[in-house]
Length: 178
Image (cartoon, rainbow, N blue to C red; front, side):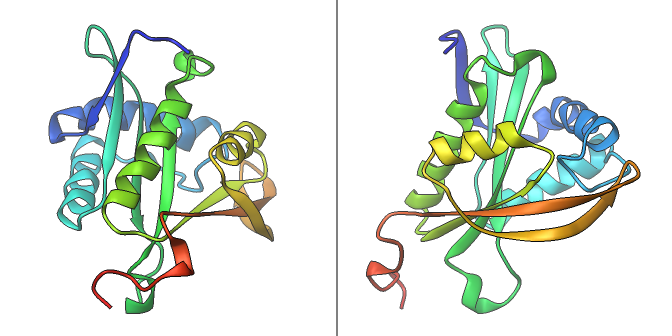
């Protein structure tokens, strides 16, 4: 792991760097099923909305402050019954892959979600992204299903792997506000 990185909460000032990182995944990969990269203003809106809803959005920076990757969580589903479940997303700059950025982000994101009282974390991972499956498995996620040919991008059908990880006591106790 590269020890010359810092972890912190994202701010609206990080939107340009986050939009740049995400743009690669939108245009060049199948990790995201978006086909048009959001601009800086759109990304700032997404950050603001996520934070306002009480979910974490984290960034890893190098020692000069350059954003190397980011992770955030959001509500898993719109219905009230999903209030204690979240979906996770992690993206790392292409030139920073393999330096511990993803591991740092996923571990911190899970801790932040757990601290907020969430009980289950889900990851929806394109079948074309085996490194992401490995990252999540190392963080304790288990495979729970496959959505066959759920997405279409770059001229091919893409499966989506669903992975799940218990947070805190998971379903072994009632949530705090129940």
